[in-house]
Length: 328
Image 1 (cartoon, one colour):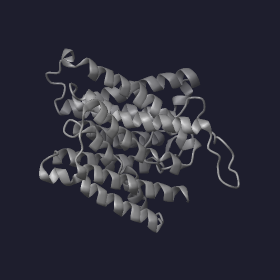
Image 2: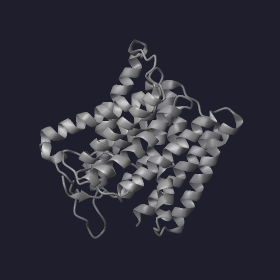
Image 3: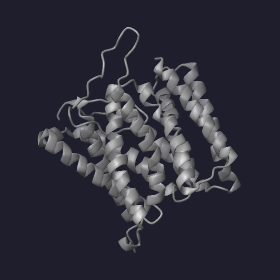
Image 4: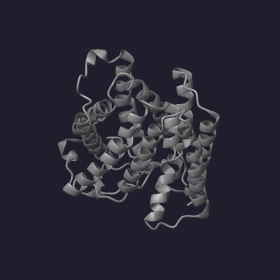
């Protein structure tokens, strides 16, 4: 593609279906608002459940895999598979982008997948997957702050939601001061959420490939390459023995590549083009609930009262912000 495309700013970035370069709205707006189709609800359900489960899958993958190498493998494989599918379905010409478009996708990919996801997989060696998901729920609130810094006019309810969320983050971080949870892990997750938010914020303001799927493929390849280079510089490949990687870690990585990166990312980017942004953003307060439940059910993870309280405050704050956005 040679046409500069811009995507709406969102809490995250993703891929879109290969059937068209830009998805069309599902239904024409009616005087009373847009009608939400069954397809939108199906895609939302996929994002709710799959992205909520990826925290558990990451936790299992890094049990016996070096964190950044596992992330690099995930995104390089997913990006290569996606490019192959796009070339097959749309032809090689569909992968053409301008230098500026590639540069925009590359920067967003590094912020999202190296700075965002890369730090998450490192942190999940130290803290539970449920707590990680609760802290990542701050992403929409950081995005609101970035919009405020960029000069966007925000309502009082949105600002109140951000302040409430920051209070919830403080409560979530309290166990780090008592030593019951790794303070370094909490810091990594906070930086990761800010990096993901910045990448999401810039994805709507930088020149990007017109086809969101093409954009996401390049984002995954560049982000995966960034994870690989940092992993090698950090010495993660030294003494690595593939035979020491457990079967469940391999299965978790396969799930992250095929389901987490391809299926859910595809559903999410399609939603960005086909549904109200405020509705799409509701994933941010559903994912933590799914992650906490799965961590408790499958890994016997336990959260303290302060962590549950802080998570509830953050989820409530995100709900306030998202409901405000839906009325705009």
